[in-house]
Image (cartoon, rainbow over all chains, first blue to last red; front, top):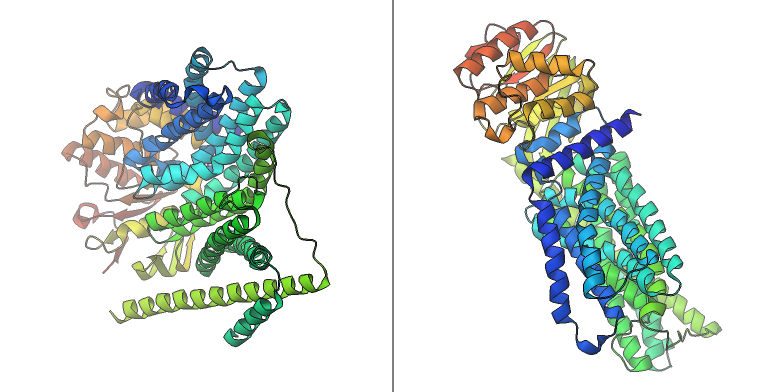
Amino acid sequence: MTYVADVLALTRKDLRVELRGRDTLPAMLLFVLSTLVVFHFAIPDDAGDNAAYGLLWVAIVFTALLGLARAWVPEQEHGVLDGLVLAPCDRSAIWLGKTLATLVFLLAAQAVALPAFVLFFEPLDATAIAGVLLADIGICAVGSLLSAMAAASRARELLLPLLVLPLSIPLIVGGVGAAVSADGERFLLFLVLYDAVFAVLSWASFEYVVTE
Amino acid sequence: MGLALVLALIVVAEDQDQGVSQRIFYIHVPIALTAYFCFGLGAWKALLLLWRGEERYDLESYVAIHQGTIFGALTLVTGSIWAKASWGHWWLWSEDQLVLFLVLFLFYCAYFMLRFSLEEGARRARSSAVYALFGVVLIPVSFLAIRLAENLIHPTVFTRDGPQMSGSMFATFCVAWAAVTLLAYVLYRVELAGKRLDADLRELREALQ
Amino acid sequence: MIRGRGVEKRYGRKRVLRGIDISVPRGGFVVVTGPNGCGKTTLLRLLAGLALPTRGDLLVDADRSRIGYLAHEPLVYRELTAVENLDLYGRLYRIPERRERIGMLLERFSLWDARAERVATYSRGMTQRLALCRALLHEPDLLVLDEPYSALDEDGAALLDRELEVLAGQQTVVVATHDPERVAVLESSRLALA
């Protein structure tokens, strides 16, 4: 079970780095709240209740992008990523550790954002929240990998949203559907499918992204 | 080869005696199918690159995806024309194929952004390959999502007017499909050869220095 | 230990390493010299296993757990302390009696007093010494050092001298340096990159 131990050590490290630096999580929190407020002014009065759910998902995706853009920054300083790649642990453990840490940050931001959403806009039932959780997994899994790809590039802040947005469209469909549709379970099932497929793909291909 | 191509296209044009919407359909669907095929080929070459590690697969994957994106753009254009001719709108969110291609087009455009912003080398080749694999997995997943979203966002007002193809129509369709596939193949070979030539020239220049 | 023939590394059009032959027996001490940009770092990265050659054969008879690499960059987290950094690597390298080993290395490289400070507060020399600790943490059979003296002050350099004296003969060492005279005594062979 050294694989699990490796992953946990890496996740713990990420949480510790964030706790010391304290820059990503507050930014995500502030961003998501600001976005929700902006939405209030952006939605016309007669848009209908469901429009708010769509905007919630836009807010979630962009908040996740904020977190993902910073995900590999600690590894870029002092070239640490090479150090991790050199270690005898499985490279996919590096990905999993980072994904779990990013997920924790996203969930933390949502712990504030979702109640705020309910306060400002519309209620959220269990299916909607389950949709949020499942989509979080998907976006962190795929985003972690894409962020590592973008980190090596000259234009990483520009590149990451371009890479993540097309892949997040199915997640938005799933999430909004879970919140809005009467047949929410179908959308949840779809999200589970997305998560399973793309998480496995990301897990397996991370090795190739960080080695030459 | 070029001659056969031109002939094939002319035959297709002559065979069609229906209205514009049907004519476009004969081109639109083969182009869409060819785009899918190119993306699939790109992903296959990408897999080979990661598995076998030979450099040439990177170029082959890139060219295949490049072709696929071009054909994807054409799919969107011809699809839009078809929508206008059939139902009077330039764009229809209820048309699964169109929406799917829009998503894929965005995805593969990002592929080129990725390539342009990474330095040449093994790192770029591998990241591109992984991304190409994601693309091919995205196709069915997106399709499912769009299906699900349809009922959510726009109730299906226009039922798909899929032409029930009689014998001669089917024959025309096959000719068109063959013609487009041939075109794609030719373009693929030409571009690949051109890029290989570029690379060889560069190597020669290097060796002479 | 290391055997390479016609090793080439290309990044797209740029050929960084051209047809290098290298042969290092177990316990050897190789000094790699050459001007900036001649590919020393690239060669060392290949030896450490961070990259694969684009052409040629390279055989390194040690897996990741037996190789220690000192790069240009220190490869340590700025926001973590020395102990936290080494503890993480210690876990990843599965070192038995991690705490003792970390303590011993920190003492040996005069970092014991600063062990609970964040790396961000360290001087360049201290960071480099920590990087050395990181490279030596798992007692590697093969040590690949990329210009280890460049960031060290006099005291740090003296510590490294002492360390290399102990290691030479027991482990296989490959050092890239601008100052080959410093390790001339320990040197068993030299590789000069044009």
